[in-house]
Each structure stands twice: as C-alpha cells, then as structure tokens.
Length: 480
Image (cartoon, rainbow, N blue to C red):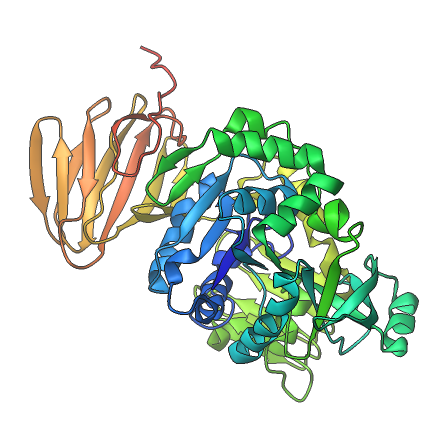
C-alpha cells in the first residue's frame, strides 16, 4: 500500500490576482468545477488500494478548513499535518515521514499540479515501487515537449537495476539557449517535484545530508497537539528549522536517487502562461478561462482572458497579453512578463494593499463572506453559512450590525434571546451585544450584513465560544 502525502503549501503569488496568500491556487477551480487539490486527491486515491484514509496533507494552519472542504468534495477525510510556519519541502517531507510507520511507502505530490491522465500517473508510480522498496529515493521526470525556462531539469544517467535511471545531475531553471541544448540531447527531463520512498529511507537520507532539519522536525513531532484529523507540531521548536527544498537538502547530494520518466501530460501551473497553455485556442491564438462567456476577443491575437462572472472583459486589437479580471483587482501583462507577477504582489504587499494577500471573498470554516461595499463608518458583506454550520459566539466593541436574510433560515442569538428568521426578515445587533448566527436548515443561508461604527476591522471581536476550535480572540479595547 502506498501512503500519498500531498504537499499543500505555497504563497499564492504566481497566479495573482486569482490566487492569493489566503486562497492559493491549489484551492481554486482552474480546471472546470474542481480545484487542483481535489484533482490531486482523486488522482492518488487509486494508489491506496481502497484505503483512502492513509492519504495525508501537509499544509498551513490558515488553510486547514479550506483543505477539509476540498477533501469533502472528493468524498475523503484527510489527515492534516499543520506546519506552524512555511519551511520548504525538506521540512514538510520530514514531518510527514516522522508521522508514518518506518516501512511505509510514501508518495509525495505537490497539491497544485495538473496531470489529466490518472491511469498513466498511477502506472508510473507503481512501476517505481520496486526501486523504492530496494532503498532508492525515487523522483519522477517529465519528458520535455519544448525548451522550458520555467522548470528545473534532471539528467538521466545509466539504467538502474530496479528500473528507471540513475540521476546524473540536477539542473536549475536554465536560460533559453541552455534549455535548447538540454532538450537536444534527449537526456534531460523536467523535474516534476514528485517523490517516492520508504519513510525510513527518506529519514536516513535526511540524517546524512540535513541532520539539523531532521532533528528540529523530530523534536517538533515529539510534542504534537492532536485535534481530530489535525496534527500540530510544536510551533516553538519548529520555528528554528531552516528553510530548504528537498532537492537541495537531499536529492542533489544522495547517491541512491533514481528517476523514472513520465511521458504523459503534466504542468505545474506555475504561471499565467502555463494556465493559458491548458486552454483551447482559437485560430488567432486567443484563449479564455474562468467564466468564458464573459471573455471577448476582437481583432486580437495570442491574448488570454480569465474572466470573472461579474462583468464582460473585452480585448480589442491586443497582442500577446494576459488579462486576469477579479472583483477587486485586475492584471494586464505582456505574456513575456508572466514570471514577474510575484514582483507585483511584493510591491502591493509593501503598500499594505489588502488585495496582495486576500480576496474580497474570504473563506471561513462555516462558509464565506464577500465584502460588497465599504465607506466611512460602514461596510456591507454578503455572508453565506453552510447547512448545519454556525459562527462563533462573539461580541464587538466598535460596531453594530444589521442582518437581512436573503435565502434560507437563520437562527440568531442576541443576548439571551434566540430568533428564527426567514427570507426578507431582518434583525439588529447593538454594539457590545453578544451574538451568534447559525444555519439550522438544509440549504445554504445567505444574509446581507451592514456594519456601522467607528472601527470595522476584523480584529474587533471577542470570541466566547467556537465550534471549530479557533483560539479566543480579544478585541481591541473600547474607546469608552
């Protein structure tokens, strides 16, 4: 049996503005109705021989409920190891290996890759199992179809006794002329960042090549907090771990590394050019994604439009452009600058622009909210609560709230009163009053919330009780 470990980190900068720190690309339905993470979970499930409970994910604390929601859509309950801080793939893989039986066969997969042919992927992994059983660290390389400068490369060495090839060397992302040279040799593969090894084999390699990373992770995993499917390593101990990729920490140094070629379709979906390349093109080279009916090309060529559902997006007479439209941010870029999008995010972040890290629509464990409008002393939100879910019992020092039910049934607690409201009914939450919103119904509850007051920040909250185990929050003190 194979234990799939999904590496679900990432800062969400390369596909901005659709992907952001609080809602990175693995959770976004880029390919039809399903997110890249859901497709990854469905892709690795056949490798578990029906024991899908052995699938685990390494992710951030802030993303745990997003991940649980995606897993539920895939019909799975997934164990999550919650990294206290992002420390790159060496630490993430060490945490997972320490949490598994020593002889467990571990498959490490990024959460955000696009591999449409599941059976080809499964066959590739199963072909590499004998090598991993024999104590090899197995990596997978994609047969290159063009001289990409966006991927690292792996040079194949001599054929290995247990299948695949010895690894001759790893090559960093090359310049265009170097990429042409590598492709021409026929000896190089794109580095897919997918690994197969027994847990003990990986731990032994870390002990040799990155003992400091392993030691910190071991100590952090000896003092975990278990909360249902969530495993929390000790944050204080983990904070001292250095950040390094598994390639640098182990793979480029170890002598027992094999590479198995993969000849199927693959993309790391690492830029808007990569996303555009997955869309169908018209005769002029134009492509569209998102709400495609809202994307319009007129006298345009080689232009990609990702349209949101809220307005038409028209490209007139354009060439080689990427146009990404969202409700609160718009990106227009020459396609040759797609790799520099993260620099835009860094600049916006330095300006404290909220669009750098979060969407107008914000996910919560009970549902989500969309900040529709805001001005001096007021803010309007559209709040959606899942059936059976409820918000924390809370209070605000600096704002009052008006709630109007649009669809569904709301159970509203205000002080010591409990009200049931249905469509077109409303209520008022005075400043300083303890309150809670719940959905007792079978369909999603949607309300419009109008906040008014002197301070409307999300940190103005005192949380008294919470269904989802979130830590109590003390609001900024009242001016009175």
